[in-house]
Amino acid sequence: MPGTKWCGAGQLATTYNELGPDRNEDRCCRAHDNCRMNIGAFKRRFGYFNLSPFTISHCRCDRRKKRDSMELLRVPGTKWCGKGYSATRYSQLGGYTRTDRCCRVHDLRCPFWIGGMEKKYGLYNWRVNTLMHCRCDERFVF
Image 1 (cartoon, rainbow, N blue to C red):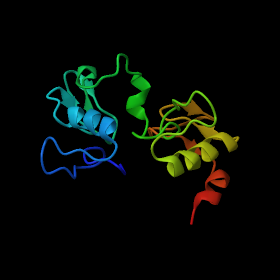
Image 2 (cartoon, helix red, strand yellow):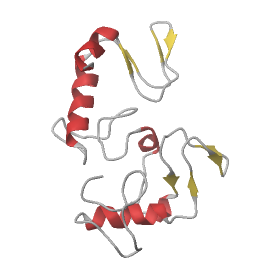
Image 3 (cartoon, helix red, strand yellow):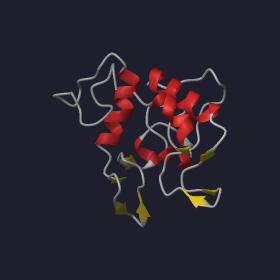
């Protein structure tokens, strides 16, 4: 994640105390990275299976009081990408603004879609992310 040394795949920090310009985010990611109670991407541990492509950590490893279980099915750093969305208003975006804008347009403007792990139109979408009608995806193909 831009502005951090601990957030995202791997880490850029060379020491435990090294933080990027976005210090608060880095502290949170560092706590997650050093949390002993975690479940790796697509792994089973503590009786749970992590469907996310990212490691998840126990709630005590971060400062949040309450964690939405649906957050595990969303792309970290975004409010609109993944299963469901956490934005409380249309203008709210996560740290990856361009990605969030793309997901928001993609998801809200398509009339034919099947949510992740849901059945609709006689079809079941086994993926975590929303499956859109091919006409909706045409405008996002380069």
